[in-house]
Image (cartoon, rainbow, N blue to C red; front, side):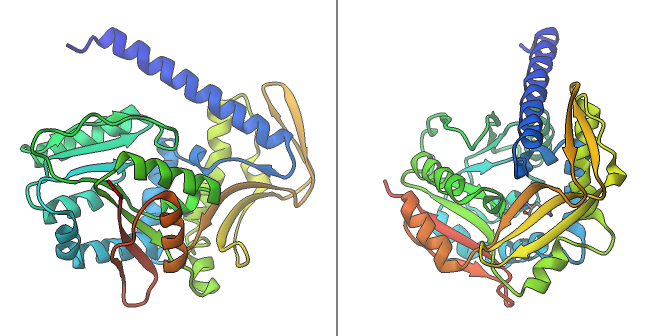
Length: 325
Ligand code: AVI
């Protein structure tokens, strides 16, 4: 039985450790040059809300393009996976995408979403379970970028299938992406990974997707500083920083930065840090892939190569990557 007092204590402990981790990352970001911080710190409740708004923007093509691929190719995807599959989702996303997959599959047996936020998982899985009463739903609170285990497969279940949509792989640096895929290949032995990644395209299209006319991506970027002020002892002046996003063609990635509009000081827990006018805090990379480049990376990580599905304009790709036994 759940003990609400114990659950509350656990949640408070998790929150304190998440805050300590954010504080360390922010201090390193301010103290080291060039300044940079992991994009994972964007996602407090407000950051997640802003990201959901980004996904609806006319300029941000990845979400709706991936959804259209999943919708149109659901039958072919289901044929690769077969009946009674166990779906392991890396991150508990909006659930819209996994619903499309579950709808297409023949008698899926279990859904195991993995997310670092227990609260996010609880909300997402309760809604899914209500709509899929037959499905075994088994949420796992873990950081899927670090080694972790999965419960044994249930009797009579089919393939174990990883689902990693949204081009979140592109937010990892190349070493992290390889390490994640190696971990996934081990966890999914005998099954496979359904992976969505954004493709290299005309820089103008990429630029527009990260510099939307309504300024939602700018708010999402600046929210990092608002979050630092709210959760850490920081005093960032949000009006003192500009959102900057551009395509770095040689490195095949969009970079997002927060650029200081003037010479200024910021403090974190009593320690002061100086920003020159024009000095930047690098907040995100979003790598873009070629189909061959992604496949070469997957093979290095221990996957085989399966079919790839794209949209007619070849904006986005969804890959089926079989994992050897
Ligand atoms: C979550 N991730 C795949 C998004 C991306 O496109 O890299 C995050 C994002 N950053 C700005 N806009 C969207």
